[in-house]
Every structure is written in C-alpha cells, then in structure tokens.
Image (cartoon, rainbow, N blue to C red; front, side, top):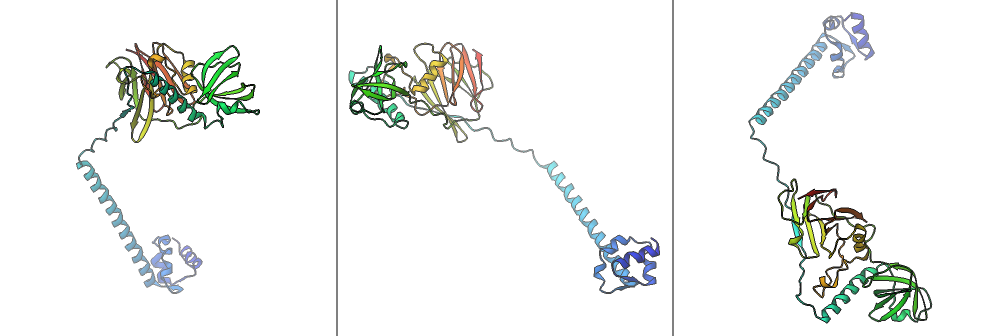
Length: 345
C-alpha cells in the first residue's frame, strides 16, 4: 500500500504515524490493524505500537486456527463414533388395537311383564333424549290446555286422520298428515281442541348435527365369514362373534371409536338405515326382543354402523358412517379417514 494511503487511513481514525511506523506498515494488511487501534491510548503511533498491533493479529490468527482444528478434530471423532456405533434399535411397533364389547343378556322366553318393561324402558330412554329438545307436558295435562304445547309419547296406532299417541298418563288422537310408525317415540307440538291435538311439528330423538367423532389410526375389515383373504388390515371383525345388536368399542393410543353392528330381519336401504339414527332406535321385530332392557336404543351415538345384509352400500349421516355388506363381500374401512373398500371373499 502506498504511504499516502496508509497515512490517510490512520488520519481518518484520528491517529498520526511516525516515519518508521509508516515503513513498517507498507507490506501489512491495514484492515486487520484498524480493528485493534483502540488498544493504542495515544494519538501518535510509532514502530513499537505497530509491533504490538501485529502481535495481537498474529495471536488472534493462531487462536482462530486452533479453534478450526479443534472443530475439525471433533467432527472427525464424531464421525468415527457414528461409524462404530451399533445400528439403531428397531422403531417400537404400533400399539395394539383393543376391542371392548357391551355385554347383552338374552332370555330364552319373555313373559308379558317382560314386554311391558321393555316398552317402558324404550319410552323412558328416548323421552330423556327428547326432553333436551322440547319442553313437554303430559298428555293428561295437554287435554285441558288451550295454548300451543308439546307432548312426548309412543305411537300406539295410525288412523285415517293421523295417529294415536300415548304416555304413562293417557292417550290422545293427533290430526297429522305426516307419516309415523307404530312404537315410534316422538315429540309432537300443536294445539288441542276437544281432546284432539292438531300437529304443527313432529320432533324425533335424532342425533345432533355436531357431536364428537371418533377416529383411530387403523384399518379394520368387516366380514360375515371367517376368512384370511383380506390383506393389509389391522383386524378382522366378524358379526357372528357379537350379539345382535353388537356394541363394540375399538381403541388405540388413547383414542376410541364406537361401532354398532346390526343384522336386521331383512335387507334394508340406506334411507331406512338413516331412519334408525333419526329415531335413535333399531325398531326390531318383536321376535328379536329378548330382554326387558332395551338394547336396541342407539345410545351412545356410534361412529360407524355396520348393517349386515346382502346389499352393498355406504352413506354418511351427520358424521356417522353407515355401511352394508355381507356375506360374500367384506368392507375394509380406514377408521381414521372412513374410506371404505368392498372386497369379494
């Protein structure tokens, strides 16, 4: 670097140089020296001051080289350790799928009292659900009312003008153009004239539009036959292993999913299956009733409903997956995504 350039650089920082110092700096890197100028506590720099600055730079470079070498040595050592280290242990296997089954007791023969108890249990169970939707009065009290009101009862019979509804306090004719089925438990809103209700609205127990939906990371096959043809599944469920209806809780990794398996007396359509959820009841033939307890009420809300029948279809109703298959096809269902594939067996 030229003398005038050296002098200019130092003067810009407020320092003067002796002639000897200038000569000492001519072949040096001025940029390195400028960083350490604050160490010089005087305004005129002589050759001894330059020596101090140069020693500082040399020491700093040596320290930097040592640090670089240290990092290089450590990197080499770590690579050697990794090379000599035994292979990682296998990743832990997925946790088991646990299946819980609701116990259902069956009686060989029901007495007349058992049937009465069954229908009372059905009425009371569905009434509890409807009571959260309606502020209802008893049918006996409704008969003397002159304002619009609601009642909860069981459909006793249908009539040309509507139907008859009853509860533990009595029965009443209802004029309605809507279709209902005998033994349905419903809420009816309307006004009463001369002991007859004129219906404005019918409310079913139904499942809510928003409710918790269970999902677990597993693929399960639903089959009416014992088979080993179904591949890439975590488990195969066979309807013959469970009561009818079968209530199953499938869990894994602290997550659970509720499944309802039902084999009706005849093939049903997807629309009829949604009626089960709307009515919150499987509405079985009387010959299927085998206990005073009502195991056919749909409570809690299932995540998946498997209808065992000869037909194959799938539908979703308010977040609940309903599917039908069997006996010649299995349904392979992803319990996380709810994707379903039917496979011939």
